[in-house]
Image (tube, rainbow, N blue to C red):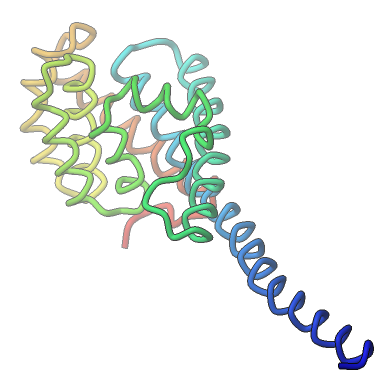
Length: 207
């Protein structure tokens, strides 16, 4: 075989190998950007829910949202890209930054899982996660689940169903002293949820 032909064959073989690699890399970058956008919104809503569960002034709640939003967004993007590239069910554990795991541990697995559904207007999914979380033996996880249900009902224009949870909220949340206070917090949270969606380029109100 002539040297020229051999070089051509080798070049084609290398090209054949590299094309899928560049395609996957591009997909990873695209998925990372998409994941970062939704992750930032999820993190911000997570910060809002932690403020409901643990209290704190508006500045502290905003700080939580900023921290969780940035780190969760970056991680979600990296994980989404890695999953698309490898078709794996799980991304490597070292792809999850500390703050993302902190948010998950703070709210519990179920309430955490319901955050993205809430951002995406998947109210039934958010409700399902909220109900499961609400039955947790961990009082913080259970309270996060109750608030998730309340906000999901209110966001879906089912405020009477949301108000039906208020008595249990008042019992479970020592920071609440009345049903009227629960109503105020529900309305404030609904406004924040819409603001977060708008800030991160998503529809402010569910269609």
